[in-house]
Length: 227
Image 1: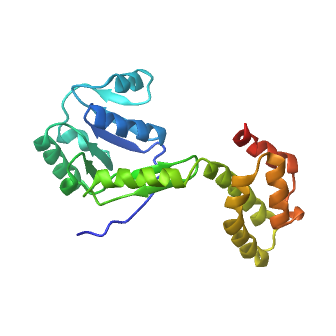
Image 2: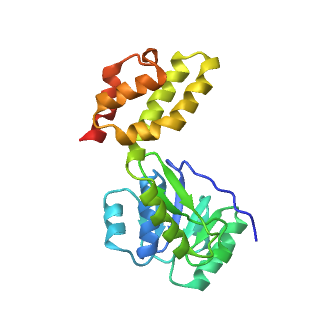
Image 3: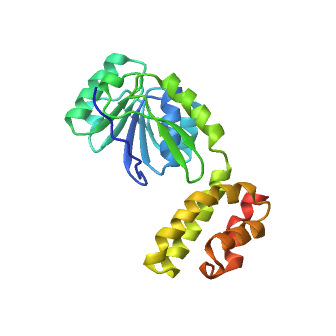
């Protein structure tokens, strides 16, 4: 079995082709659009959601059957038709062109797989079974969603803010110690805080007041998590 290499991609403005217009293709298009990809969909049929995205100009949609010539110019391709022979033919051509290909219900034809994902604002946890058991991947995702709740949105917002301050204002020899303190204590601090002010006070106790250059900015940045 090939050993898979996990990766997260920045797809903003990247041309991506989706062949197929059913429910499976729609789910993939939805996530691609959310990721900022420049999505083209080719299918003789489409869901209402795809039609709506096309009308809003968020995707390019061609209402016809795809052929090999349509693959040119795309390095990332999703094949989601209900015809295995069509998927196989297009997958072989796309791979020959050097594209990365995902075939719905065709792991043996794919060069990458779509993981089950636990997703918060900043946190993403991807689970893969190398295409062998999507049902197991979904089951693991549900378990992780309970373990990593919405408090991790607050935690990572605080972490991002503090990391920037530490890099800007703390001498290099002390940074490692402060980052270790954050990793150990910040989850509990965020989980137990009832107000932005309480959270800031507890972070001050952990890191020291000299870290903060603007208390008000910090509290305003995290206030939305306490509404």
